[in-house]
Length: 135
Image 1: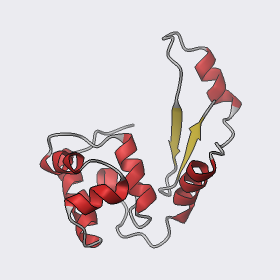
Image 2: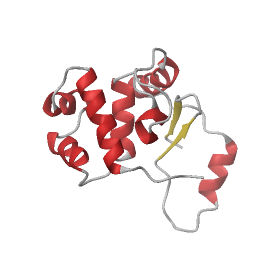
Image 3: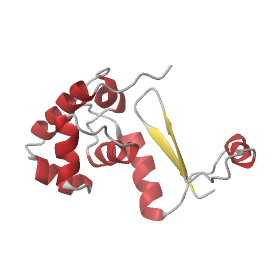
C-alpha cells in the first residue's frame, strides 16, 4: 500500500539533510542540480517533491536513505547506501541501462494509452534502487 508524503514532515527531513551538510538552500540546490526556488517551494510546503528531485538528493548524498526521506522510517545519516548510488551513477555516467526484464517490456506493449514509457525506477526495501531506461 502506498501512502502519500506528508509535505510538512518531508520539509523538516529535507531541512535536516541541508543542515547536516552545512548547506543553505542555494548551495544545496546547486549541488543536486535544481533551481533554488524548487528547494524553497518544497520547504514551504507549496510543492511536493518530484521523483526526479528525490533521485537527485539520493544520488548526491549517499547518507540519505530513501524511506527515511519519504516517510521518516529508517535512519539518517546512513553509513552504507552505496549500492543504490552506484547503480544510479554507473548507469547515468556510462549510459549503460540495466537490462529490462521481459515482463516490464510486455507491460509497455499492452498499454492502451498510446503513451510510451520513458523510465521505470524500482525501489528496494534496503533503500537502494535500480533505474531502467531506454527500452
